Image (cartoon, rainbow, N blue to C red; front, side, top):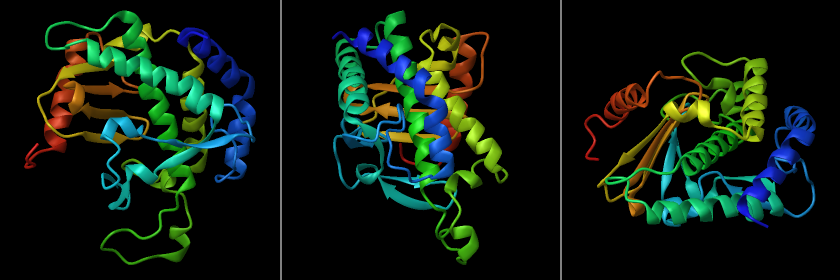
Length: 254
């Protein structure tokens, strides 16, 4: 089955099951179901950030900005059935890796078809991060007193500049899954920034329901994608993305 036939199947599975999937996860944040289609059999551990992105380094970590604690990419997983994980999303990633290796973005651009697939991939990361934050408790905030009651709440309830209400968190989750069932990403193209990079290391940061930056040193490519913001031109998106990246890494040797 071709990649595009698999993606048709993926979108259909999501459309048919998304209400049940989200309702189940809302009732039980740790429900052992496929987070995409709701399957309960043949479950696998889907890495939120694919292992090939960070060269399978088990020591690589990211910081949860909400509580300042580090977590390894290698252990950051969510449940997904074998079909959604290995067959469909695995095929998408293999296709994109081939394109990343084939195209030198310093000299040429990706095709429209590939750009839409990149957006789909980045949107899948956003959905997985939202699931992850719902499944993880806040626990202890770094360098702060532990409050047992707050420690039992999901990290997702503390995203953003102010605490996020459960209703908003669940609404964002429904939206994040719904967009994975949308075939055309043409209207989102200006919100995707494709950048050439000479950095030797993998870099990543993410703001829930806002944006993601991911730098693939192996391919000399970096992506910055605004999940919600629309831009009149790609140039204006790139300008804003560059400001955010500079602010994120200000004073860092990156």
